[in-house]
Length: 128
Image (cartoon, rainbow, N blue to C red; front, side, top):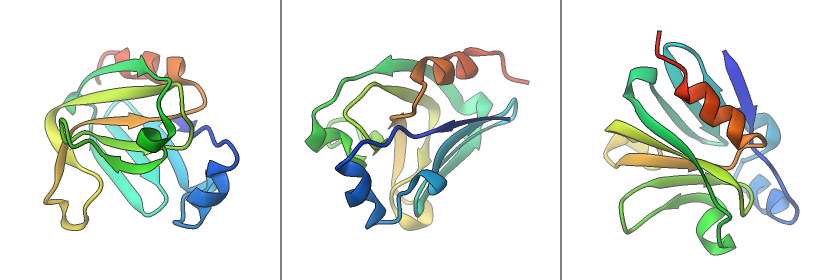
C-alpha cells in the first residue's frame, strides 16, 4: 500500500488543526484493491475499480481549496491543505465523504498531497 501525506502550509495548517486535520490524521492510501482518504474526522473509502480517472490540478484560490469543501457546481468534494497543486480523482459511482451517514455522494474528490504526480501514477496503474 502506498501512502501519500497532505501538503500543509502555514497559516492554513493552524486553522485546519482546529477542526482535527493534522499531518498525522490526513493522508491518501492506494492499494491494488482500495482507495482511501483520511482528512481529520472525514473519511472516504472505495474500491480501486471505482476510480475512473485521476489528474493533476491547481493551483487553486484559497477560498475554494482549504479545508473540507463541497462544489456547488458538480457536488465534487475537496480535502485541501494548500492552494496547489493537487489531484482530482473521479469515480465511476459517486462516493460519500463530507456528510455523516453517506447521504451526500460525490462524483469526484480533490486532494492536495505532497507528491501529486506520484498519486496520479499510483492511480493510473492497473487494478488488481
